Length: 304
Image (cartoon, rainbow, N blue to C red; front, side, top):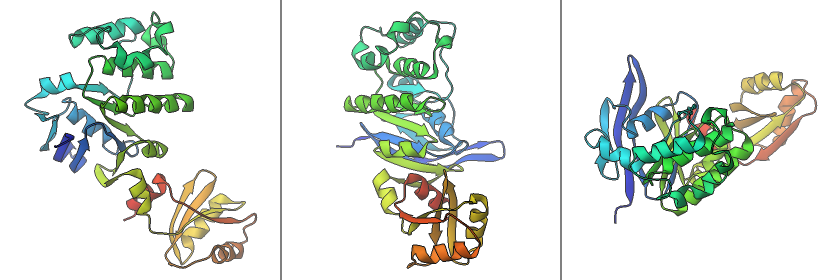
């Protein structure tokens, strides 16, 4: 039995002389949370707009649940719930009015599909008469998700849904997605936050309109084949310059309050790195071996 719900085959898109995406191909399975992970401008929104029939690809094909995104666009709009990156609901309508409007557009009612949105909607129901434009970021997010789900879509496409909301709201949002996954809704989500990659079943790491890798988060991390070090000193700016000039240096990337360093040598001890740093007159030196995360893998793939 074929469980593929989304199939994309070599789609490309140009904006005048700029190629936004380059021969992108991938598949998404039914009931999967599939993440597009990459920085702003990587091509995530362009891919989602093509899949939601809002934009035409210049080359390639894509289909959702067996429907072609060009010839079957009306059918696709009935089976897809889309939450764009920018809040796009009617700000001068109340919470309940927005929800009623989207239910009516899809020929359904709030009551008919209330079980699907209940866990999300009950959190904003006390504010159902408040204008959407007056909601906080977290509540706008919940309202937008409720409106995207009210017609009981097979596929949910969320473009950077957690950008600009607080950490608590981000966590709550991903808990909602896990509950929706249990209802066999296929979810595609894009995010610039690398830590959210681990919450997906599979991810596509994307940069400059090209996929660097498509895998489970665990398998992406397992592919990291270098020894990784977290390095600190009193003068972090100078430390970065010095490590970049070290004859054995492979990569040096800033991560919060530390630098993540890899070496071209297979066998190396922290003492050797410390000795080099001391020779450059650094103080309060720390060199610790660490395990890579998704962001380390992303940065590593960018250098290849």
